[in-house]
Every structure is written in structure tokens, then in C-alpha cells.
Length: 539
Image 1 (tube, rainbow, N blue to C red):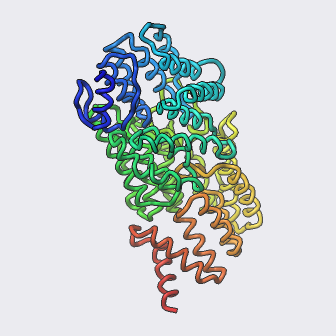
Image 2: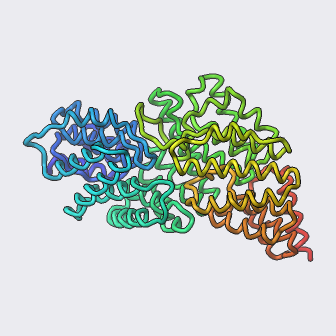
Image 3: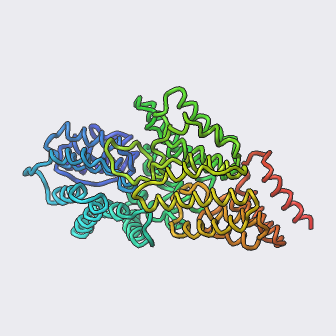
């Protein structure tokens, strides 16, 4: 049996039956990619490839570099290293580092036609033009590579990922996502242990309308690649889109624990821990009414910052923002966003799950701090004027999608301030504009990009204005965009109760009670729901 064949069978069987092929490699999934490398290089290459499919870029870089260390003439090792410098779905790329690596690639007699095709594709990824132009060029080349060899699962997988990498937040429709999903589903049918197939299915159908298509892959992905903390986290994308909070909790608890163990085992910097999953876990606890546990997570971040410095923590702002907005404990905004904490999250993006490369191109809205928004919203809710100067100063420059997010936030603060003064006509006009802007955006991939969904806030202000029927319509839209959100369920229940629709109110309160099975027992909203359902049952 040829060396790479033996390695493949070991990987598929989960056995450590070749030098360098360990159980750890087997726990990253089943991949097949014959190359011209030596047996030792191939072992590291397969590990790097599997890690790459799970966006575990740190491990992928190490494996690919080890492959070229043991076999300097192994050109595909340089391909892998260059690929690991591109975080396509987060619009991040260390272009300089990748081009330096590709400078080591040379023509050798060992190169196969397949390897030349892959090397040609990665050169397009780091060629001329801006990031989007290069993403489109790379996708076009990968389409040809995949079409020329329909049996090449890796070509199909990387083509699916390339398609997803051309999508931008402001894009309309789901054509490319569905196309990528169809490709990944076919790979998954043939090889249900392929990490990229399961991963890209989840990303392709990561919206409320299509998420159900990815549920089987989501349930399995963590089992395919349990060593990768991102593989443990990714199922929660689908669980959030379907409002499956217990499953989302388990997914993110597992991801955080795996990342903590990895960082400790390898003695890595604390900021490499999976704070992305930590933020999501906090958000999901809040949806379950587990406010005390969510606050504990926020406090642990603050303690880490005090003990190990600001750079040891990422995503603090969005994590603390979720706590303040979901609990509506506006009085805590000032303390949670004091200057020391505010500066702790330079990388507060919704999607970034790993440490960013040294020199990246990235969309500016992802680094936008939410601190001015939360402080302003809290002030407005208390009847004070919002910090509009700080909000406008935080608007990203040259980023249309980020500017839209910022505009909605400004409208929400102004509307909240107006509602606090009972100026409901003004507040509702502002929220009508905010909700219209929100509908121009795709539903968020995870916790709300806006922090406070516009339709939900619109419904809450309509309720205060004595318009429960109109409010019910807004909560309905909010729940379509983000199923089983606790504040939207509560709003829907209150709107139905105020409109005299007892059946609808009882159903919505019952849904909230189901979501809040593990909620803090002292929450007044929990008592409100129980009392209403109990009275309805007694009638």
C-alpha cells in the first residue's frame, strides 16, 4: 500500500498506525488528499488540511510548517500555509505573510497536475486587486478545478468555501450560499466524516429560513472534529437560528472548555481562548433567563483583564452589552463600560473566532465598539439625553453596512429618549425608520448585530404608546428574524394580553416559560408569565 493510502486508511479508522499520525489527527475528521510529499510530510499535511477545514488556523499553520520542515521540496505545504493566512468568512487576510510564503513555491518534477491547479488557485487569492476582487478570482479558479475533477472532494469543498467567501454583509439574496450548501451537502452525502462538508453546510444555511436544512450536519459536526473548539461551537449557529437554546448552551460550553484546555496544554496566550463562543454562551444564558450565570461570565472577563491585562480578553464589549440590553439593567451600563473595560475589546467583531493575523484586511464595522451605544441607550432609558456625539464618532468610515448598523443604533437611542418623555409620535417615527433599515439587512448570524433588534424595540415602544395590535405585528417580525428570543416572546405575550387576545397571550407566555425553564426564580417577568398562564388555566 502506498504511504499516503496507508495514512488515509489510518485517518479514516481513527487509528495511530503510521509514524506521526495520532488519535488527535483522527479527531479532526476524514480527509483525503494524495500529494507528492514524503510520508512524514503527508502526515502533517493531512492534519493541517483537516484543521484548516475547521478554521483552526493556528494548528493548521503549525502542521503545514512542520510538513515543509521535514520535506522542504513539498510545495503543497506552502500552499496550506498560505491558505491558513486567509480567513475568508471574516474578510480577514494576512496578505503580506501569504505572499512571502508563496515566494518559496517553485516548479519541481514532483509536482502533479492536481497540485499545480491548487497552487494556481491560491496565487489568485493573493493576486492583484482588492480583497473582494481576489476572492472572486479565487472562486472562479476553484470552480474550474472542481469541475475538471468531479471526484475531488477537496476541490469541491474549497470551491464551496470560496463561494461563501465572496458574500458580503450588505449582499441581497442567498443564491451563492445555497449553491455552496448544495455542494457541501453532496460531499457530506459521500463522506459524512468530512469536516469541511459539515462546516460549510452550517455556514451556507445560517439564517432562519434555511437553517433547518443544516440541522443534521450541525448535530454531527462536533463529533466529526471534536479536537477543534470551533467545530464544537459551529452547531450553535444553527441552534440559534432555530431558537434551540439548550443545544446552543451545550455547544458553546463545550467549545469554551476545549479552547481553555488547548491554551493551557500548549501554554498559549490567554487571548487565544475562544472568546467568540464565550460571548455566544453569555447571550444564550440570557435568552434562558439565567441572568446570574451570564453576569458571572461578564465578571470573569473583568477579573481576567485585571489580573492579566486588557490584551488577554477579546469580545468584552459585545458580551457586556448583551447583558445590559437583555436584562434591561440600565443602571449597570456605566460600571460595565468604564474606561478600563471599554478599551479591552479592540476586536469586538461578531464573527471573528480566532486571533487576527498581524496585517489583515478587515471590514471596519467589525471593530466598532458597542460601548457608546449601550451607554447612550441606558441613559435614554433613564430619561437622560443620549451620547449622540459619541455615537456619531463611532460610525465606521467607508463601510456602508457598518454605517447602517450605526444609524439604526442612533435611531434607537433617539426613540428611547423620546419615549421616556412620552413623545410617542416622535419615537414611533424614528423606530419606523429603524425597522425599515433593519429589514434591509439579513438576519444576524448569531447574537443580534444591532445588540437590540429594531423590530423588538419598536414593539416595546408601541406597547408603551397604547398600541398593542401594532406592537404584536412588530414582535411577530422580530421572532421570524430571531426565533424564541426571550424579550420578543415577552413582548408578544404582553401585546396579546393588552389587546384582549387571551389565547394568543397564554400561548406566548407559555412559550416564554418553556424557554425559561432554568431562569432565575426571582425574575419579575417569570412571575408575570406564570401568573397569566395560571389564571388562564383556571378560567
